[in-house]
Image 1 (cartoon, rainbow, N blue to C red):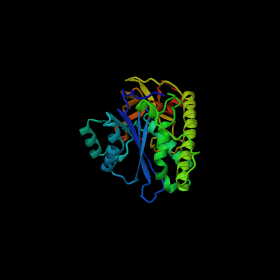
Image 2: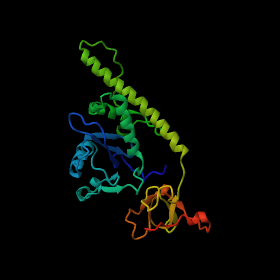
Image 3: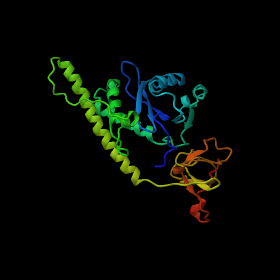
Image 4: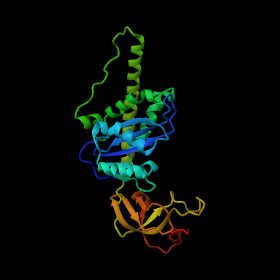
Length: 297
């Protein structure tokens, strides 16, 4: 996996995204904002509504992240209309925060937020039989997520962020005179234990998968490349469209893994693509090569 340029301190660079489609409970929240620190992988999860505006998102970000960690130097996100709005861009320009957007058709710029989203959704399914009460267990799930050792660093996000591990409940065997209190603590402990085990398994699986599919991709300015058509809207049935189209010239390497291509003027699409969607162009006169032409329209 080729990461972006690494940050030098915790919460200097963050990724953010939304998990939507959650069951609305008494609060009406049916989504949550997910913010992940790129250095320590520590994450915060803030309940919200799918209809949240850019200004409301900014306020939520301030209360969730800036209140605890200060203003980040960079925020990495997809091209959600809230994140491309003039309000959002002007606000963070005033804070001195650089906004970086994902490559076209490659929303997981470094993959961290997407993996965290999937993990949290799985944790909610595992620990919340009554799905509408997901907000009740979210704080403990966040704690468990941040206290689980990473498969790559062998340290938890908590430890990497604060330099020490937090205090956790060791035992629930103490007799209680208040049954509801004992039930409450046991429920939290059970949720934590399930979450920690699930996170450990997921981290180990993710590491094996990444190592299995690891490949270094190097592209250079001026190079001719073919573009994967799987995310392009072409005037051809899916089964008939060529797998790649082009060739296109790389005009700029925006990052080591994001290339800006020279596309036809009438293509009204974003021209920055992750290198995983590109292939070096090798001139050929065969019939196969002639299928890899720039499509009409």
